[in-house]
Length: 240
Image (cartoon, rainbow, N blue to C red):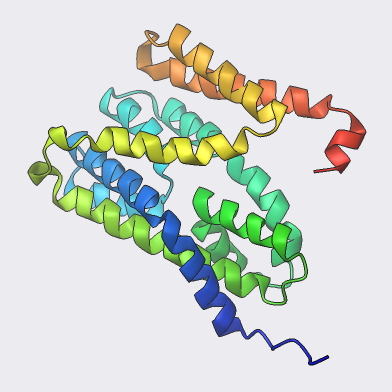
C-alpha cells in the first residue's frame, strides 16, 4: 500500500479558501446589506469604512447601528454588541485546542478572522477528517476567503449605497443568507429552543424604546439554549 500524499500548508490553505467559495454569495449579500445600512444610518464615509474593517462583525454592526442613530447611551450600544457576539466565546472554546500550537502573537489575528460561515465549514471538515494534518492552514484559507468576500461586499455597499435601489430587495437577500446559517444550527433541541425564545421575545418587545427588545431577545435566547444544554443528559452531550 502506498503512503498517503503529503498535505502541505499551501495545499491546505488553498483547499480551505476553495471550499468556502460556494458559501460566498450569502456572505456577499449580507456584507452588501451591512455596508448600505452603515451609510444610510448617517455614518460618515470614514466611520463606515473604519467600522467594517475594524469590527468585522455584521450582526453586531447591524444591532448597534439603530442604537447609534437613536443616540442611545454608549453602555447600551456596547452591551448589545457584546451580547450579539457571545457566540464567538463558544467558537473560541471549540478552536482552542486546534490553535494552541499557533504562536501567541498570531492567535489574535486568527480570532479576528473567525466568522460564522467559515467556522461552520471548518468544524464540518474536522468531523469528516479529524486527523487532518494542516488544520491551521485550512482554517486560515477559509477565514481569508470569508474576510475578503465580506470586506469587498461591505465596501461596495458603503460606496454604492446611493446607487443601489431598494427595489433590489437586498434586505431580504441578507435575511435569507442569515437563515441559511441559523437553520443548520437548529438540529439540536437546545439551539432550536433558544431561537424560538428569541423570536417570541423579539416580537413581544418590539415596541420598547432604544431597541431594547433586540437585546432582551438575545439574552432570552442565550439563557434558554444554555439552560437546556446544561440540563441535557450526560450521554447526549457526550455523543455530540
